[in-house]
Length: 433
Image (cartoon, rainbow, N blue to C red; front, side):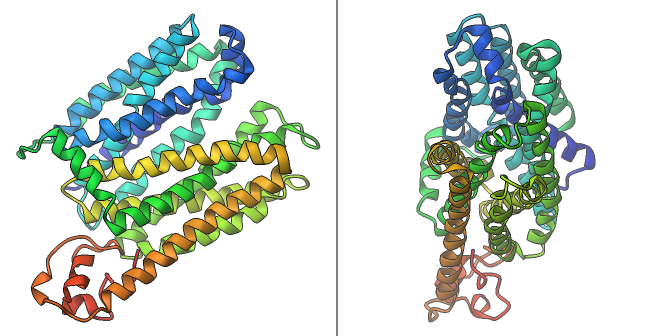
């Protein structure tokens, strides 16, 4: 079953608004602290509450997509995210705000269920392309939310941003029920079995290698976006919050440009795209690091960095959902655990390093994370090639499935089983992860 343009747009909108509910507090922390009397040293908990809720949702809620109708699941999660946003908008005490943000973050994992459902509804030939479009909504939510929330807060206060989010979430929940097809399930797996299956993914080489790549990828991404405001607000630039927010638009342009990475993945080039994009990621830090004397170089670096991150992210999800078409929700949820942990590491490390070594130190840190991701890719690729070249054991092991290159057909099990096709020069197993 293919995806219509309308459904792609709806999927992207769901991702954008849901993920925005997690990041909306970042540009208005000062306003929140002043309004509720939260000390500056404790403002970090306002952001952490939503992120901790999101992390719990990845592990506990996203796997439900492999058990129940994802259309109803997405709608229900959007509605509950709206409840959390409404709580935040009306909070008069800090603990109510934190509870609302944690609730919103917990059910904002509708994003990952949406990505998994989009992959399941896509034909194999269009899966990468569709994932590129849908995940562009995630980038729009993360980066675009900074500008939108800042604008609303400047006009009507920070609470207006959460009121707007709550309204949009309810509207999207209704549209999901109206526009998406039913997701009928015939299996009888239990929730416990699905969670056990999720744990089993961490023993699979493809999942672990792509997860580690995502960990370092988003550590590098977090290093940029959690720390860039620090040198921009300092001498010699002393940019305002609104001016700093414009750099998010540059990143958005780069990330949306990477939507084409899905087409490359559909063509069987996911591995090559990953390696090339990670090299670009490392190089981009050379430009981003020049913030002390050239804002134009920083803009170019931001565009390239976000292009690279999104290209790798789309390729990763394409490979994993192709390899596990029967449990896309679990595999996407498990993969995003690496994303969350990496983002948290980058956000924490960049401020610490900046305090001691300035933006040069943070840039070296971001480039080091990129180099680690590139090293994981190279090792996994070499391991896959060696596996494909092992002597044949039993041709009977050949079966249909996904590949690390993103093409439907042969899997790594074929190479391990000695399938002659897997050992040929044209085998999609050979390129590695």
